[in-house]
Amino acid sequence: MVVAVDHNSGFCFGVKAAVQKAQEILVKHDSLYCLGEIVHNESEVERLSKMGLITIDHDQFFTLSNTTVLLRAHGEPPSTYQYARQNNIQLIDATCPIVVKLQKQIHADFKSTKGQKGQLIIYGKRGHAEVNGLVGQTNDEAIVIEYAIDLEQVDFSRPISLYAQTTKDLKGFHQLAGEIQRRAISAPVKIQDTICRQVSNRIPGIIEFAKRYPLILFVSGQKSSNGRMLFDICLSENPNSKFISCLGDISADWFKDIESVGICGATSTPKETLEQMAEAIRQMVD
Ligand code: SF4
Image (cartoon, rainbow, N blue to C red; front, side, top):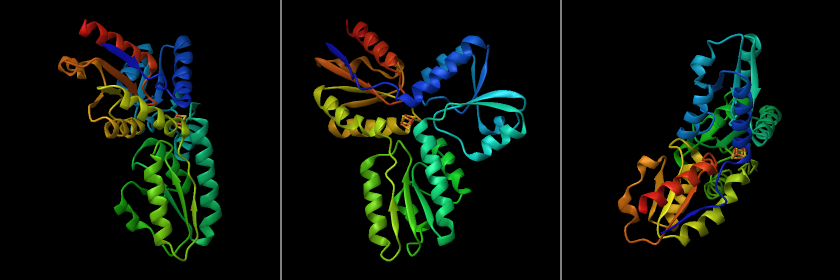
């Protein structure tokens, strides 16, 4: 049986840089705090925790002082930086440069349109770390649109600026933008497509990959936004696509009567994990 790994899969550069930063520090120090999971991938978090990375949540962060904390690629709201300054916490900031640019853009837009009663809308997943970081740039006033029903919070007679969480799907963003333009007849609407091409550029390749094999194994952490989005694309192209997080999720029955299987994954799944999985499957079917 042929077991093929998608050569386009693997970490995006933002996640790769954050993981590298953590590793570099842990080579010299026994431990390091990381605010939130460094990557939405359980096995990678476990690997780094064995090296000394201690994942903390925000409640724990706001009790710390006189220490060092790594900020992951998703970014953080201004309140995190303020607390760190006041409590002698050295931040190792691994926020992805694309997210930093988006945070600055949103902050500048919020400030410049506030006087004209502007509303800033973020197409994203409510409570997601990146979205929290973006909403924080607007004094927590931005409206997060996750589902169509959330549009009820928008006043369509006032100016609107629409942004997107970097890992959202382009199709959903364009549908939302169209709906906002349709409803806001008299008010100005500014559409800012801020979706990261590190994710969206993978879509055409993943569509082709999903069509090529009778079985697709999509490897991702359960909490990965781009993982869910890319998996849904695989599933729509190939109904025999399975979402898995580890080897234990695999059933040997899946490989009966098939000649090939394709393995791909999220931008938060390391390429090495896909290769290891491929090797384990080869041994399983042997
Ligand atoms: S998906 Fe894009 S914005 Fe998000 S961490 Fe990766 S490179 Fe940065």
